[in-house]
Length: 339
Image 1: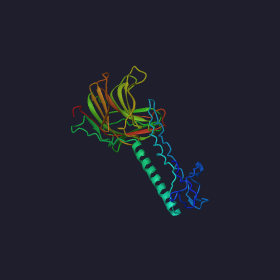
Image 2: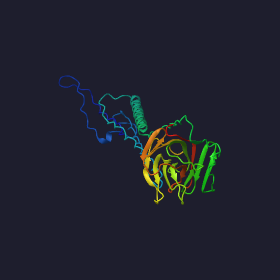
Image 3: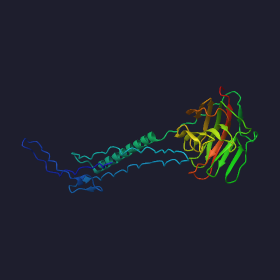
Image 4: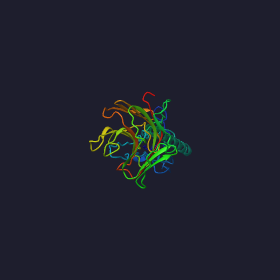
């Protein structure tokens, strides 16, 4: 912000009368650029006090969030909006008036500085609040009142989940209200429902939290899975959430080298980031498959490839993340479609 200066005082002259007998003020002297402010208050040759120049305020710097960490799939990036430019400059001006006392000049300068600082602070706070990203409040999804087709509170391993684990590679635990999956070597770990259960149309409810690892890691649910001689999940639909607040949907094909991206990585403010719980609802209704997170419907796909199959949970330690990630599932239940 440009400083506000005071013009050099006009050299005093003796009072004199014009031709009509009236007093005539002296002519204004031109003011040079060097007279628009001084490095310190000082007494001018005329004996009048010349106030110091007002210091230049520092413009706020730009702030940007670095790109979100990525995975094997496309990643988006988000950049905070730049803060506003400095407020309009105050134009310096001469004051053609009787000089005021030194104390009054200093008080005026102090008041002006306070006004400038207060205005700048209010402007920065306003634009910072306006530019801040808005976070969606999590909304628990109410479960149906009818009995579940299958549900597990994860208090213990009553239903016989596969808890096979290898230290330093992967681990599965059940207890304390959570099913915990941990993968440490940049791979995807899935955990099918016990008992070789198969489902066609349904509503699946589960809460999930990415509790360890980089934000780019993924987790979620397989539905309508099918096995072959090489894999327990050769065919499937996979609904993936990521700790950097994105989601994707994949279809597995036993005859393909890689799954098909039905929905590529997509950011959503409805999804909570790493360390926060997400309430997930997956609705399977014939060929229509719908993903809802925290009460907001994110996507419905239509695909007729698979009509029924197994359900599984998974966690994915993506290749460009640091080794190791963990997810916890809770409040899980599968209900009839019309419940």
